[in-house]
Length: 222
Image (cartoon, rainbow, N blue to C red; front, side, top):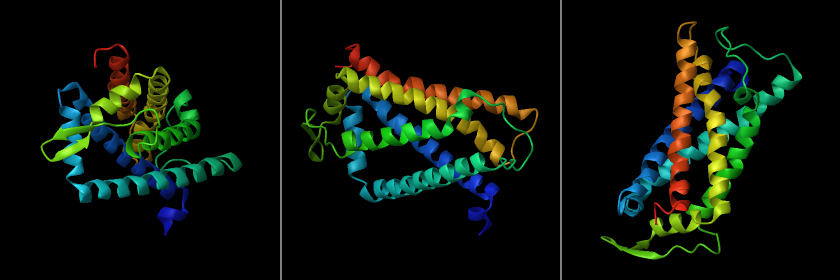
């Protein structure tokens, strides 16, 4: 199938899988932001806990998207190092920036962060941050609020999280606009607009996610 064998096809797979993960990042940020509402994040976690088919379906889709993005992203990077890069479907290239030149490395760092983040907050293997049980409408449940606050009161954990959000910003600063270029939806007029839109969205993610550990360290969230 040409989608898997041609360079343009693999770029399309990388672009689409990347945008699926961007959609997840948006939903995840909305859920995480409920921490600023009294009882919000525990209620959000309780609702997710009550919908295992939806949660597991989403996890499977995200896992497939992540593996697709990683596999074909590395493959394209290696190909570009051994041969002349194959042009995009349309010959309007984005100006090389720090973000675009280091996509593979920001991707690697994000992969490491995702593994650590899942071990920390999903598998809950961090030994000194044991989640407590909260009494919710459905009965005893992990007190997610206390777990998050307790985690980010550790300066090192908060610093690693914020640094990872900077890496996410760098990756998406190029990745979002490159999606439209790969799909052939750009033009001389729309290219600057896409560039600004990608940067704006990446900044929103950076500020939105980083605000949580910063507010906790500042004792605004206690």
